[in-house]
Amino acid sequence: MSALHASTAQRLARSTVAVLSGGGSGEREVSLDSGREIQRALSAADGRGPSRVLAVELDARGRWRVGEEWLPAGAALSALQEVDVFFIALHGGAGEDGTLQGLLESAVRCYTGSGVRASAVCMDKLATRGIAAACGVRTSPAVCFTPQDYARDAEGCLARAAALSPEAVVAKPRCGGSSVLTAIVTAGESLRPIVEQVLASGDDCLIEARVAGVECSCGVLGNRGEPARALPPVEILPAAGRFFDYQQKYSSDGAREVCPPQSLGKDAVERVQAAALALYAATGCDGYARIDFIVPAQGEPVVLEVNTLPGFTSRSLLPQEAAAVGMDYRSLCLWVLEAALRRVERRT
Image: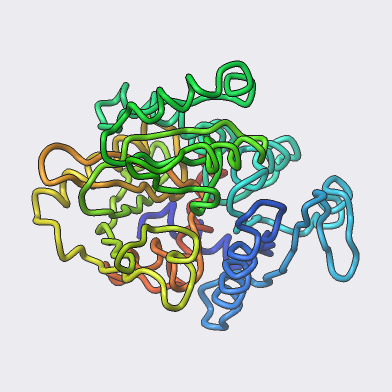
């Protein structure tokens, strides 16, 4: 351990940590699960963790539960002055799109994960696609349209989307997560219902040509200015006839996940890791993230999205990848906290 890392560990041992979970996105329940498991892991008494761990739930109205009292965010931050690090366990919505990160930045508070810009960019799948193209990471053909586009020319929008692939396309919210309101539409099926569901949610609708191949996800650990580390990818094997939707991600009878991947050779794994590291750097991520790919039989990995606050339950993909290199769940949580503290130390 370097001197910097040693000082960070000592500072962490004196720290009070607040685990933030809940929020108002469609991923609220997963976030609450992540928060509970993070709090449980950090509270273990082995001398390596923070001196105190608090659980703080956020609701859909932006209120924070501090103890038994629900407070507006500003009042909650004032009531949590003793907190040294906020461990963000929210997924999607204002917890992941840079809104919460901006609040904490403006209050000059230390928090885990990526900052405002990277959080906002990575939540926006269309923006992520542009960055991927700029740094040489492959994307699938796509179109994106707003509710206003669809209101002006619904048939034209649907025709352009259907023309992306003669076999199947994937419709999804431009800024959603956990595959909520995501669907695969095969040739001959109507795109209209899922497109209108996405647009009714208030988001834009992104349609991508479906790419056949091995689905995998690759975690990356590291702050900007430090060497980043790509973890072994995890291969995702949904049940027959299914894709990695919300049920397959979080149900006990959902997808099977294999780490290291069983269907990718060494060269393919290295290409996935290289693409993950390139996107992590280009989008400006900090601390940790998880990047999802499809690896076709021929050609380079195709990026699906960058998750700046991926699931943190013990079954989630990032902890599985960390475990494959000998980092257990508690050690991963501590690493994330130390990364946040190191980022602050560099600024002071």
